[in-house]
Image (cartoon, rainbow, N blue to C red):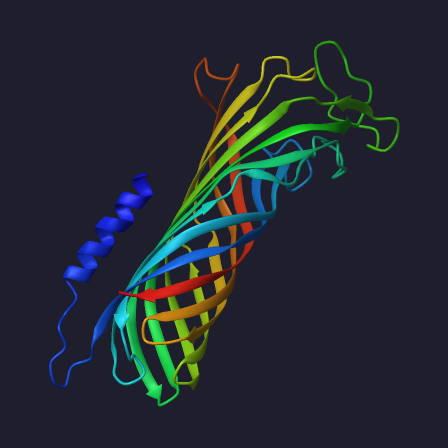
Length: 335
């Protein structure tokens, strides 16, 4: 209901503020585009070692989205004939995922102090509880040729994912010569008679949020007056991220643990392709596909146990990543 109210207000503001074209000026219009599609890929949760273990990572958790269907809306303010003259454009889009099972969740640990061998591995059914995208874009368009249009713009994006892992199983390498007071940090190979565990119910939950600003460029080619193809590309290091991880109680972790991660930096890239066909002055159909990739985002993690109580203590260095392909259809309605 809140989203519907926001959309209505934006449409009224943009439509009432629409300039009236005069001779020699380009006309602008407001369009509404319902969106439908799917997201496929994974979110990454990383924990880096403190210098005592050998492997480059201490933990890697992959949250799969294979796939997650979404619906949404895009509000656009732009020229009616951008190929004729340079001008301004802007748009706002919101996408909401449909909750459900979306593949598997995998958890890997490398705890050895003498080698890079895998020591812990578990797999669970992954449930996507929430998937939300907000994107705001504003920029300028320049006709380079009667059939070629160049766009330069700035994009601001906020993304929120929420998952939980349920059921599944795990296997854990046996430690070599542990003592009652100290772990040896040495393990047998994980495939040599490992300890095993079966899980029932919710095992782990994870929420990941992203905020970034990115410059972008796009080139459109008009095959006909009513059909064009557009290639786009964005890249940026201006990234911040936050995450909440809750490892539920189970046999090997009877108290449960909660982690909060605050990260920044890294690199985001997003190439994309869009096809746009106008069926008339008021109606058009679009199809788009893009790959959103973020890597190298790092920061600090804080932990407390049991979940929901106690004081957060700094627990080392965390990281996050993202690799998703988004594809969908839109139905553009010019107001």
